[in-house]
Image 1: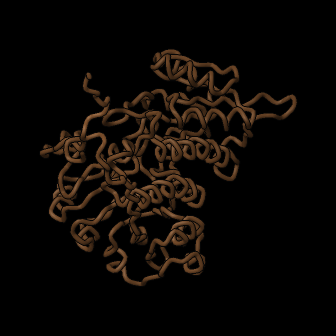
Image 2: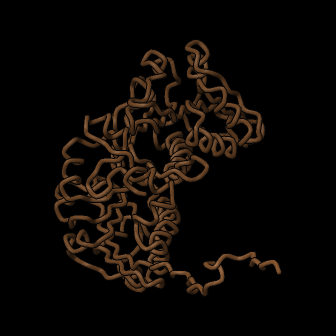
Image 3: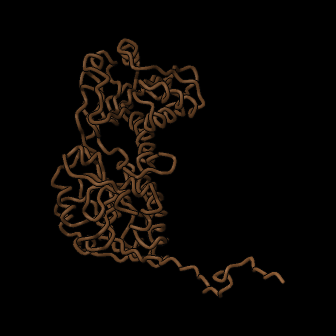
Length: 399
């Protein structure tokens, strides 16, 4: 009689232990929100509603007294949302996770505990080598929200603030065109029988697009200049409205500048913004016309531009009113704060859900792209190249 063989091996027939899913360990966040000390900075990273959403999830938040005043939020609103109000900046900087709009000063970094996490803007062009060396000594993990990139390759915070800057530039120009501001006493347009004002926009990025939207909405005639045909096509498609577009050719630009009532500078460069409008072109502009140089944050694209402040925002040169205030979104601090807060809150909840910044960064590429320090190790090549510092790839450190 032939021997019967089982189709299963002996090992497969042996009883096996039941495999249970291990529940992910959620983390409790201990967040500090200090008062912004940078000149004219009025924004705040979290609104009271965002604080309430986080405290309802069991997270602790300490807010320095007066931190929300610039955006017209009171200490009482934050207290009712569940935050602890502190009168000590050192106590706030002692939290495990620090949220700031502007990068901290060297003195403020001194108050941060070793191995803490910092969320803030980086503003690379305003920094010095000592800032990065001080962060490295404290072994801080630092994330720049102006470096965070989403799955579509968009910089969400930068894009949102650029939208605000674009709309603001037209609203500011509308104010400066009044007789009270020594302007020509013009409205943008939409008045029957009256020719519309002419607006020139340099740059077809997000700032340029939203400036164009606002100017068109007010009835102006808009001309947009950029050396990228792709950007010009995309802008035309997004606006869904016929506008004059051109590459930047000196003669064409000079004619447009001579005829315009408002010129908006919305160009970005890899290092310094290129100067596209010479002083000679500005001299030929109409008396009482307006320049709003949004590009002043990185040098300005008009040769006559000089940095001004929110307290004294304008000067007149060759009969042309210049507005050259860096950080225009801070002028509309509440809107800007709401925008930043809406972007920050989901990230914070996700970090807690994943059990901490390290786990979250493992699965979230956008956080890794924003991270420029990991436990005191510089992980951003642009920063390393700019200041001649050693750098490690973040993807090799977080596995």
